[in-house]
Image (cartoon, rainbow, N blue to C red; front, side):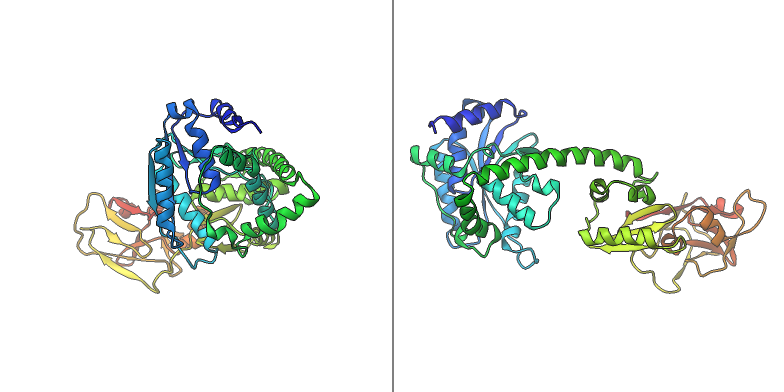
Length: 430
């Protein structure tokens, strides 16, 4: 391979890249050392603005030495560098490898300035490992598409310009340019999944199929194209099945979606709401309950800090509601806002002191109200049903009484006398 090949590759790749300064993630290992060295030789990279960032995890005794090595490497290339120390959360069930990666990527995201492009040194062999790991986890097209060359990240982008190049090509560049790097001792730990694939499995595959890494990368590219197409269709499908409120879906329409879209639409919906994503068995259970539960039932599937509840034709996504205190009630004179169980408040506009005070409580059954302008007194139970208030919300609505007369049901139904109060029910954020 010509010595200029990596530089020429980067020249071509930079020409198609959005504008923005480049921030190289420098670990001190061979791959990132090659990437930083090669970019430092490219005038366009310098002209954009080029700097490096090293994340010090503190996971082994030589962490400080690694930071020093990265500083020296960057200084030789006249590239400014920042060293960021992070704490790796341990004992959360996902393993030290994943915890360190999360801490590293979070630090990169925090340091990235608007429009900057984080540049990482992942190559074709890394892509092959990623695809195999995803396959072993039962991933779909998105996972089997492996790492993207370019994607939005933090305030800018994440760019992996070396994904088409092999590890051996990077090692040739390092050797031919006399580069120095450090070998992470954790790379020899084959109890870590990626290391096991790298040391034990991929060499055996390459011995039988010499182009295995290229074939896996090629398959990843096909899966990526398929995933991008399916993702675009999922966006359109979500717009079709979403209810009038952002946190609702028309569940029958969702169930009628093709298998390739149903799971993705659900996950995209929950991500947009800032809620947890389900495991595959949660999705299967949700589909079963929606299909099998009779119309008078209220199916509910819980995972993480998220609940999916069915009411009539809609599927509602919400965080679990805190339990209400039994038989709660409070006297309220209106001079200040009244804090309600669950975080809501009641206020009068304008605030003023009432004598005698009002009584505020939740439903206990049998309540009736004559809404302002209505001809007859109605059962609250029927009014709430007609207003399509979901059952899990009905018990949380504050009822405002003067003596035995129900003046207001939150701000949903207000009597003639209640209308004069200027009542405001402020809901806590979902």
